Length: 159
Image 1 (cartoon, rainbow, N blue to C red):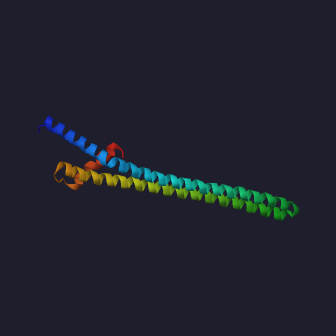
Image 2 (image 1 turned 180 degrees about the vertical axis):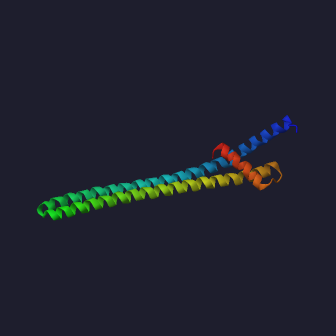
């Protein structure tokens, strides 16, 4: 089996042309999709932070309520004071638990959306590369082989 230099050079030129075409026509679209997903994720993080801030405000409010309950507790018997302390601890624990729960749910949702976006982008890139390479080469190649080659390329590029 003999390798011809001219064939090798033409293959590299064809490959370079395909890369330039992909970059020219699709790079901004893919970049836009990624930015859109990132903005969505940022919004969800912002909402989670707002929810955490609300939880902190509720915690402060609960602490104020507890303080007034302590002042009244001085006038009431020792049993009433213990009851108020118990209620305070329960409210604080519930607020913390709820805040942690909200953060965890938001983090999981963000991670799922990120994985979904990455999967969609990879899938779209493979489909576009298959269509372009078939058009550029002017012949039909086995689709499984084609997908494998393009998947290997994307894995090497690091998408």
